[in-house]
Image (cartoon, rainbow over all chains, first blue to last red; front, side, top):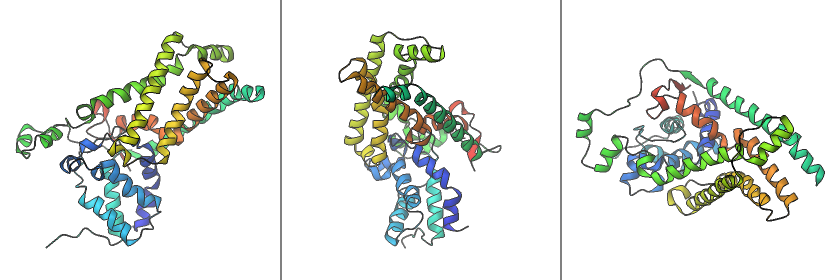
Length: 115
Length: 226
């Protein structure tokens, strides 16, 4: 499956999730990383979802190298897929983040480790 | 003006409700088509005591592990405000005397009505809480970081029917313009519920009841996204 197949297969689900998200911010305190990083908004589950898979969908998968690097940082450095995130509307945020990871992997954009 | 009023008061209402019902049915069918029953396994709905003791020294992490980090414990004020807001947004138009009189006139059915003073109070609560939401959206850092243009126009879409209804009832501006604006904005809101951010009305219940998650209602969610 190519990266675009991954997105087009799940396009309507991603679109609905982005639409159902009321941008209420109630998911914030349910994320360990948000709490541990001085409550920086960039660690909010909704922020991560909107700026990773939401952005990929908005750009129809056509991303520049810098955009991919930015999303890589969001989905690998700012989320560990612990699935603790609470969404009042039941949006499956970890699933959407993992879709973004899958998309990047298909584009040969991987998390690299130091050392 | 009279023609516009007759259209929005008559066929306009029917069109808006038909669009709302068809749109809602479409979303419900779409939901069941895009999810499937999940027979095996389950989701953890509790953390064993021993595991809790082994989690790091941070009190905050321990609390989150015990699911105390859901909205009730972290932001109870906002949970109360938003719950009351949604409650009044739904019951106020349903039990409004003017709406029930029009229903009786048109379709010979009506619901019980609140007193006009009570409806007024409910509307003011909605408008007040609405302004609080707008304030929060602009001045709260975490909410502002994820806000876009569609959040503002959704706010206007919901706020306008209640504001114009209040203004029309109290005849603050010319009544004929206000009542037409009220009806049009109300019909627009109803029509756009299944097709805009307001579809969270439908998906809130679908997701929280049917999708398997440790936060699903009644712990009976047995569907997953396919």
